[in-house]
Image (cartoon, rainbow, N blue to C red; front, side, top):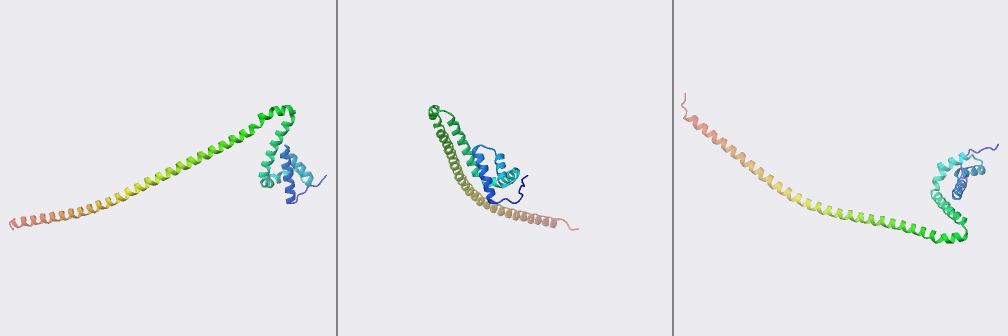
Length: 189
């Protein structure tokens, strides 16, 4: 029975783990097979290797994983092509080669259309923004005019109130004078 290690992982062991897992991904194997292979090489359990991969190493090799997956797809395509005889490949070749170019062209067209839509939207928002700024300026000017008008009307109202109070006081004095005159005409008892 072999003893399994439980010490800390070194950088070299992390690199070995990453290389073997990426190779298995590239060649179409499973990660579990890779963990078993690394476990044998490093005297660790495959579960420990899997845990180390998922908890730490995988995060360091995201771009490597994507590249390995792309290489696996390309490898599958070449393996399928090798299964055909040379005559079948030459007969199928013209039909296969325009497809990737067409896909790239379609992707480029979608990208350019998206870019054009974004530019149009940005331009429209910019136009809307300038229109809003112009309307805001006009409304601010109207607001200033209305404020001046309001101040003038308030001043006029204040002077009218003053005149009204003066008139009321004058009428009150006149009424009092009439009352005093009437009192003088009354016989004194």
